[in-house]
Amino acid sequence: MQELSCTWVPGTTNVVRLRFGGRTIEMTSTRLTRIFGPKALGDLYLKGRAVLRADQHQVALLT
Image (cartoon, rainbow, N blue to C red; front, side, top):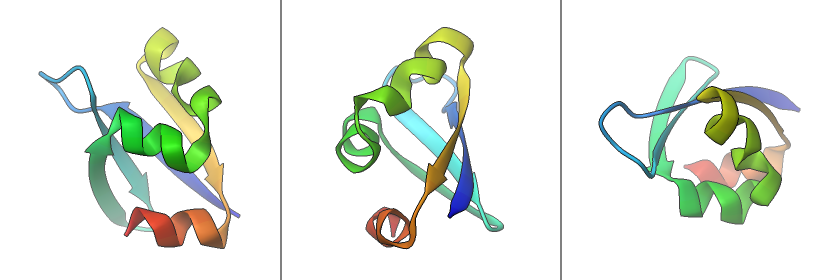
């Protein structure tokens, strides 16, 4: 399992920035939901940031 730090990209309403293992990836909130499920966006909407745990399969889908 790997921890991913998620925040909104400033000035957008649907682009999420993911940081993990020294890497940074940007993707739409729709794609994030497809990979991690709808619960992944809960903290993002409420707090503006979230920490997700990803298995190897999910990390592979990010790249």
